[in-house]
Amino acid sequence: MSTPHRLPVAVVAAACAALAACPSPATPPPVQPSSVVAQPPPAAPPATPSAGTPLVDPRGVACEAARCAFHAGAAGYFRCLAGGAGACFHYGGPCQPSDACMFDPTARSFRTCAQVVEGTCQRYGAACEPAGTCWYNADEGLYRECQQRKPGSCAGWGALCSPAAAQAQAARP
Image 1: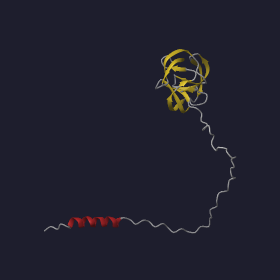
Image 2: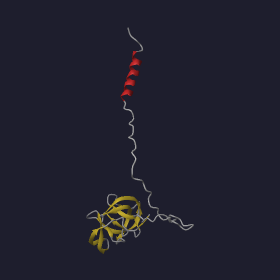
Image 3: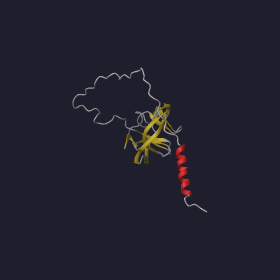
Image 4: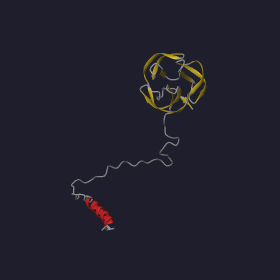
């Protein structure tokens, strides 16, 4: 003979057993009195900006503009947002150097650019010398200080430099 209520009773019994096995919430230990008394921090002298003086410069935050740097993998120029030790670590959008002197990967030299599209030169011209002293060295794929300039290339390389630093080429959108 079968009992139709046996299954629901078994489910309820299992649920009760599971709840009974759950640990009760831990009771925190009682707080013991302490002899240490918290002291408020020393009060700073109140800042008294003059009336009408903004707390932040209304012209915006003084950030250096991102520099235009050659990206060998893309064979074009992009804004270098962060760099050092001869490399750009984070590239932004495409740009063109303000003096239009760009590295030509085919000729492996710096040449003027008559037509730039999305950071890539479409029509190169004569040899040129980029602005600044931090130039792309194609032999290493890194940026170095150019200590001896000559049209189209550098005849004497110096220490590694950051393409994001102030001496790198200025950029225009």
